[in-house]
Length: 138
Ligand code: FES
Ligand code: FES
Image: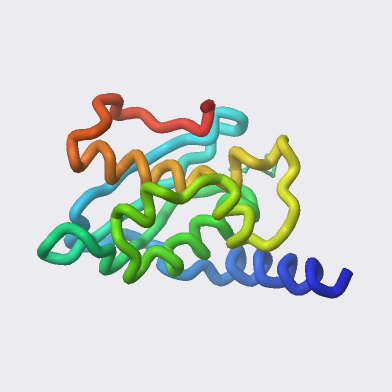
């Protein structure tokens, strides 16, 4: 229907004109992760405020399909001003809602890559996660 056409346009727009693409000069933390299905990697740079509670700026870089790039672009905009807790509470349904289209099981790993990288980056930074490698395997 018309509604999902609009969302598809939005995904294409974020893919062609990604928001917050690049690297931050002074990130609080940086993390890279891979979609094991294709080997595409996304890097997320996050800068927190002085209290380390609120997300001030987010940038992403790396390659991937339209879904993964649009998801990273939308997420990077969405996260600015949110708290770290809000980031950590996000799940795949929130990402799918952000994208606004049905995501097939084949492509869900593309959709959640940026979210997972940002979450793992935060957990590693706060010492809650020991692994240093992120993939969307699980
Ligand atoms: Fe093929 Fe994302 S476009 S898995
Ligand atoms: Fe690589 Fe979608 S095909 S991230």
